[in-house]
Image (tube, rainbow, N blue to C red; front, side, top):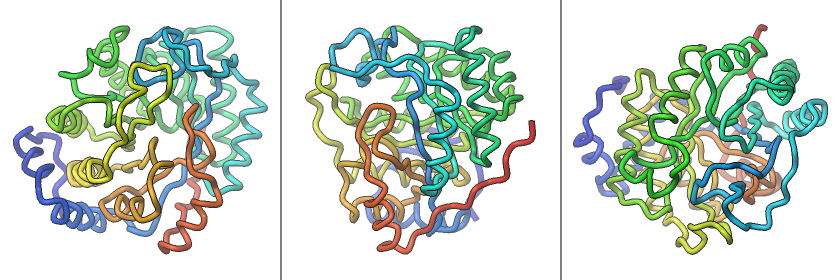
Length: 323
């Protein structure tokens, strides 16, 4: 079996990433089969529990107050409403439920108390609970862990070198600090990036290098293809080529064999055949439901048909976290 390493050199990653695409897919598929059942896919649901009004200026995001995107802004949802949505997600086959709030950072107030209530309620359903709420302190992470949080998502988005072209209101070090706080609380890290924002292949390699050389690989690595939103600075970006997605997925699989590599935003623009190649290359998780926070996603009917056609099955639910 391939060795789990956190000491990858950028030159080694370049050699993998630039392999002929069919060779790269084959290597990704080989590593994937060493560590995972290739027909098992984790189905996740992502719910925006607080939408819009974010003070950050991430160039890809319609939830920023800096851009006029026509987004329907709503305040933090009621915990019971969120738990009911999680029940429906479980009934539709999801085993992980992720709650996202458009905040720069978590504040210790009544809204955070509601988040803790949501985490506990979703955990009691037997679902893995994930949150993406912006920057958090170690103390806040510990409180969420105690409430039953399984994982925390905080994407690096892109390379350190290209980062300032995408966001100016938060530094790369800020993002890495949040990941450190999550790790200290013994919460699983979900961390990936977005391609198609104008970055180079070298930027993509640099992002993968940062992820693969963290003290411990992220348990979950979402690979997102930009969905250009009218009103954002990236509204005119071209659709990401499937071959670029495949290079990212296969390379991530080879570098981080144990991780869930999540085929995330942008999947709605892919045919079933293209998604099949992504699963072959090493992706083993998708997000289900009509929306990913605020961007469109595949319908449940499409995903069920795809699973049946490709002979895939959803991962079984985990036992709830003891709190």
